[in-house]
Image 1 (cartoon, rainbow, N blue to C red):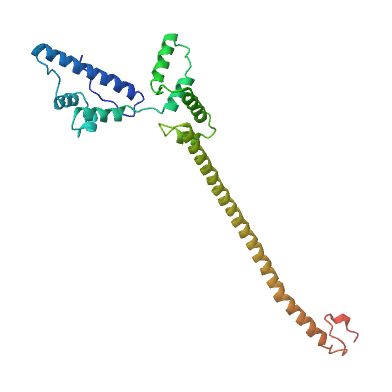
Image 2: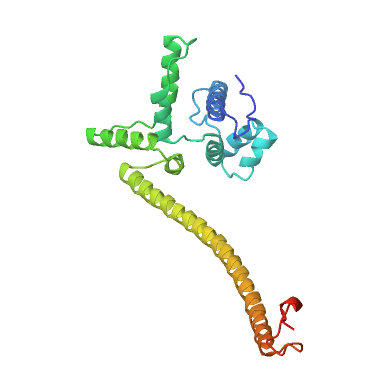
Length: 252
């Protein structure tokens, strides 16, 4: 059976599943061609395999123009397959994959067989290995540590690492936590300086207003005092006594 052309967006949701199916179909197609060639040349021939250039040409015919651009410069069939796998097979973070597996529940319309199949599919991305009890314990603690962190930003940074041991996860989390606290201190200091600057401006305006008022008093008061002193030295031209500001107060 001839496989269809590989034509899928690398960012599509099920790109990994589609690519695995296409690659398996293409490999079966190559095996079928080898069997046909073996039947044609007879069992006496020991060389029934395809050469690398021929396999590369065959591969190119089963790629869409857009997909072909990824492997256009590949020099061999194996190199082209590696490029396609890197492009379409996005390996999930094992910690996140195990989180999906641990939290996957049976859906209302899902049979037991379908539920079990879904778990088996999720388990493929978990990268389970033969480990000792101590290593298994460390992995469980690591997964729980990352999954239950209160800081989503720290969790996101930890999940950027595909291979992360417990000790490294703790060290990175400590470093990121310290960086967040220091960044918060910078923000608090900036707000404090802003508040102090606003207060200083207000106090300066009040001081300027007070100085201006005092200057006006300082200018007016001496003038009033000089006028009063001058009036006290003047004599009334009617009675010859002290100067009277009001006429009716003069005894003459």
